[in-house]
Each structure stands twice: as C-alpha cells, then as structure tokens.
Image (cartoon, rainbow, N blue to C red; front, side, top):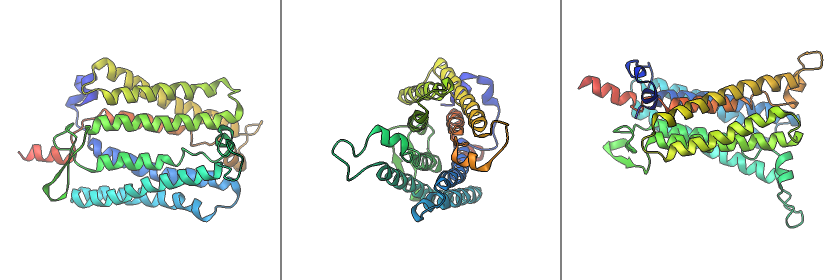
Length: 307
C-alpha cells in the first residue's frame, strides 16, 4: 500500500529514481557514519578513549562505506549486495547490543548495597544506556530493506535459491513498529539527558512531548492493516513535528555551547550540550517519511517493465 499516494493521489504519477528499499539502505549507511562521528565526540569527553570505546567509532564509518559499496553492487547483482549488506547490518545490531551492555555496567554499582546497584540517578548521570541501541535499530531497519518483499506488503521475503521466508507482518507495518521503538529509545535518552538540568528550561519539554506522541502514533500505525487517509495525515504531521523538533533542538544546543559573547570554543562543544543529539528526532522523522513511499522494490519494478 503506497501510503503517501493514499494521502495525495497525484503523487502516484511521479517515479523516484530510487526505490524505498534503496533509500532505506542509503539512510542506514549515512546513519552508520554519523553514529561513529557522534560517538567519537561523546567518548572524547573523558580525554582518553579506551579500547572498547573504539569499536563503534571505527565500525560506524566502515559499515557505512561498505553499505554504500553494496548499493553500487546492487545495480548489477542484488543478491550479492543483499548478502554483503546483511553481514554488515547484523554486525551493527551486535555493536549496539554490546554498547548498551557496556554502558549499563558502567552505570551500575555491582558492589553497592541491595537496591542501590542500579538506580534512576545512576542512569541519569552515567553513560546513556539506550544510545548504542541506535546501531541496533539501524541494523534492523536496514536488514528489512535489504531483502526483497514479493509481493509488496505480503510479509514474504525472497531468499537465495528461490526460497521465501514468511514473516508475520508486512515490511511497512514492521517499519512502523521499528519507528515506534526508535522513538521510544530516542525520547527516553532525551529525558535521561535533560533530567540532569531538572527540566529548568521549558524548551526541554518539547522533545519529550513530541517524542512520546510519535512513539504512540508509530505503534498505532503498525497495528493497522490498511490505514485511512486521516491516520496517514496524522503520521505525516507527526513526522513534520519531529523534524522541526530536531532543528529547534540543534539551534538551542549550539546556543548553549557558545560563550556569553557568542564565541565558538571547541571544548564547550565537546563537553557541553551534544550538538548531534537533537538531530536524532529529525532523523527519525526522515525514517518515518520513507516508510510512506511505494513499497515495491526496484527488482519488482524492473520485472514489471520486462513483462
């Protein structure tokens, strides 16, 4: 079901140069690269990056470049590109889970008294436990995009050797649920980070409210077999709010990191409000927008033209 065309029928007349799957994989590649950069800035706060902290810093850009290379291969050999992308994206899921584990044990007091070994206060002031899970979300969404769904919205993925894997949900509905999980992780990370300031600035409530709303709407869309135009319109409005929230948050973070005279000091940008964090909201908004595109892969498009 082409959701964007359901909302605005004239859209169906236009053909994008890339399929939804290709755009999803491109977004995954870009996210891998920027996650590596973002984590490098975050890990630089201590002044010394230890061995384990180099894993996501190196893996992110390398994975992103390999995914871009796989995209080029897909123009001639989609099965080979899919297998290459699958290996990279499974690795991304593993890096995210491993990072969440490392952050969790860093935030805990294993020798503390019972009931005090892991508290909300420790989670607020410790390394962001949910932050590394963005690697896992990118890997999961990329995996879904890498395999051809035939026919579209059937939940049946075409596997090597002419075999098929039947999933309980269509790709589109699975993407909506991934969007909801991603938003839940993003908004919880935002709340834990902003809790350090006790929400003294009223602007800090904006990402919280918008994030919670987007989480609920994304989950709701994932439960619908055939959303109505009103449902899609609400989701589009939610996506717009997320992008606006990301831009506003970035401006506020930059302003907070500048000196009282508006001067740029690199140290303040590294140790102050994380510059790239608010753009996660805009990034999730872009992900949500891609979900609404034509679900047919470029492989099926070529087969329809040949027929």
